[in-house]
Length: 149
Image 1: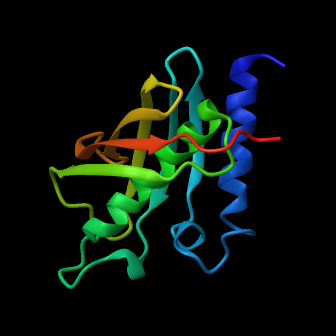
Image 2: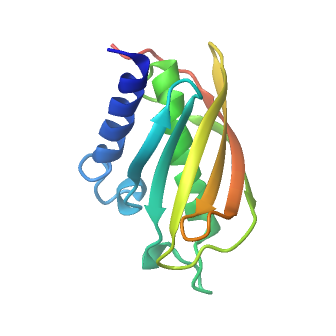
Image 3: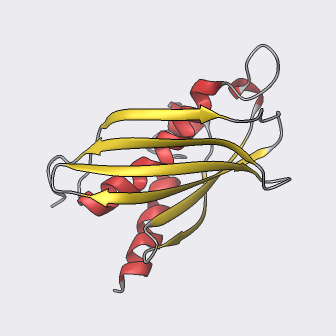
């Protein structure tokens, strides 16, 4: 199987787990959807339609949910490239640029920047589906743990 197909199949399978394995948990409640991936560019893109429970008291996307969407998207790439079943987040940095309204869809594109033996560095950008404008950007480091068997 070619690498592009492996990444796509892995991304789709992981997102599909949100509705079953992660039912009732944050990853499942956010209702992620697979958009696309590119093995050559080390990227994966997911979408997150903003739901009422994800908003803060002013009615816009809560920053913690934005961070969770970034962490989830980057985590898929971290586990894929490290070939692990669990790759914990060591650090996560988010820059909030503009508000994301209820009903909007946030498109999160993650990129693996460095794939080491011990850690994987990634970046992500979240864009508003309606305008394409950047709503947030971020970076994270994930730990490489045990290999999948």
